Image (cartoon, rainbow, N blue to C red):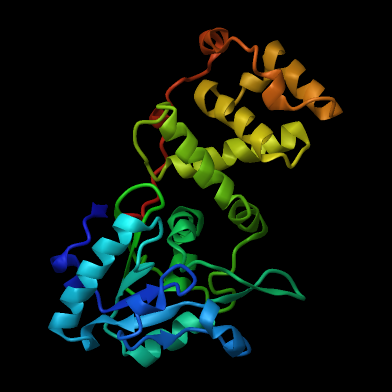
Length: 294
């Protein structure tokens, strides 16, 4: 569910997260920010998120914060408040839980800093994670709110299920692969909007775009983002089997040989002929709605 960031909604949340790498210190210095740097990363505290206890600010400061957020968003791409959260737990309990979620084990030897607190990432956590993973990430938090990278503020309820006491919200290998494509997914969505091929942002489109990107990277056997986005767009618009059509299959084969790019090979492609062969041409008819996104 989308929502405006107004006084009524701000008042309904107990906590917020600010990313000091994207927000000037002057905007949050008086907000009694609590560092969320996990144990062992205290030296990098200035680069890691901060927790704000909204109810402790007082009425006037909360009103000032709302004005600051509006002014900041008029001048910057990133919102002043990365996330807002509802919870009846204490600030110490919420802080302790969130600190423990920042370092995630990627494999037997390595922990990585997962920037779920970035709204450009959290947008995808909402559809990518399973309900028990969302429950594990949420802990004492009952609802999240964030501004989607393209669109309005969104809300996510904590699923009514038990968290995994052993794995927590640790992503699977397939989820790690998608997390590595988040930037490409966001850029492709912006491109589709700018060209008018999509007229709105729908959460179910994100997994569809990711699946098309994964198929494109595999088909091209290349890490070139422009080529992958070009083929993924064709798969999304004209159907996942369009790469079996001769005019697409031959271009994929040539791109694999490395003599030229797939983008270059498609400059003379007549897409009106592809449309006639499309399995479907409206991806919005193939939505998959995660039941824990509201």
